[in-house]
Amino acid sequence: MSTPEKVLEQHSAAIVRYDAMCRAIQVCHSVDEVKAIRDKALALEVYAAQAMNTDAERKACEIRLRAERRAGQLLKETKKNGQRAKAGDNPRGGRVLNTPKLADLGISADQSSKWQALAEVPEEQFERALRDPTTKPSTTRLIQKKNDPGPRIDPSALWIWGQLREFESERICQHRPSVLFEAMTDTMQDDVRRITPVVIGWLTELQEIA
Image (tube, rainbow, N blue to C red; front, top):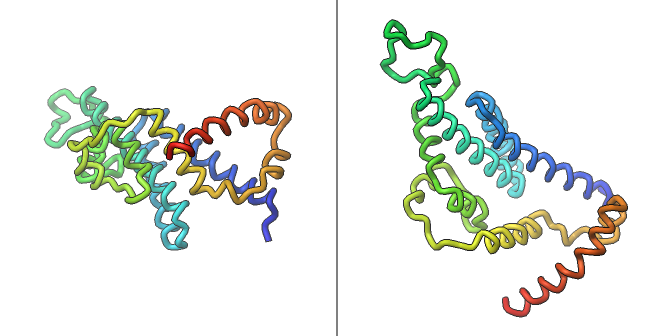
């Protein structure tokens, strides 16, 4: 049976891996690099679905979609800059022979089209779709709705809603506060003592109006 300390360790490791993969996607500058992350996320998504682990499936799905969006951005950039060969390009016409084609990158024409369309989805709409608890996001669904941005939401309101949803999905409330607190460093504990009263007051006001 897992101890509270073990559960905390596993939870923290999962958050670190998720955040690390999201950061890695943002700093990718090559299509093949970000596609590798996408393929790994897809495999994890399929495995989590088979294991009926909805939380893990959702996170893997989010990582996959972020990677596909970044791949779409890079595909658009490389095409615009002449760093990727297009259909009908003739090496004899003066183009560099080692300019990669989609097939060289392991990407189909359909994937390229969808990922570039995904890159055109406004960031706010994209993030809102990832955090929608009622529907699992998908590449096709996001593309279909890119021309329907919906109501504009204050970024701060969107952020706090997402944090509360994350708090619920990770089942933080199931962990004993004393166990979490003792697992922190002295600096972390000092921050908790300073910030907690402010957060409690803010959440109390939110509860009163909700």
